[in-house]
Length: 126
Image (tube, rainbow, N blue to C red; front, top):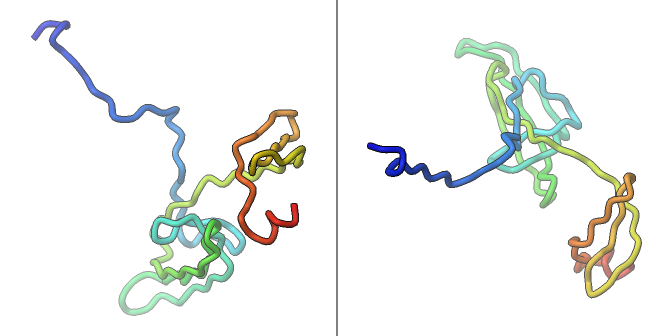
């Protein structure tokens, strides 16, 4: 096969950054973050059971979905890895509201104009 006949198709391209990284259950902490049932969550409570006759100690996690606010729970062996979401928090200053969208500025002076005004009480107060 010549070079002209060789074709490769790539479905996705990216910078190689992952949305999550693995962390052992025993290293997770309250107020930290974890992925439970495919959802990014903040850990609100956790407890560890002792090692029993059926193997490893178990970690019981209670967490809140950071987007929906729903409570999720998971029980996993303390030696198993769980996905931890890469969470980046950025504070913005509100500059203006126009046509139902917020005009925001970050600490570096960069602007963000694609955030829709919320359809709840907070949005009505703005």
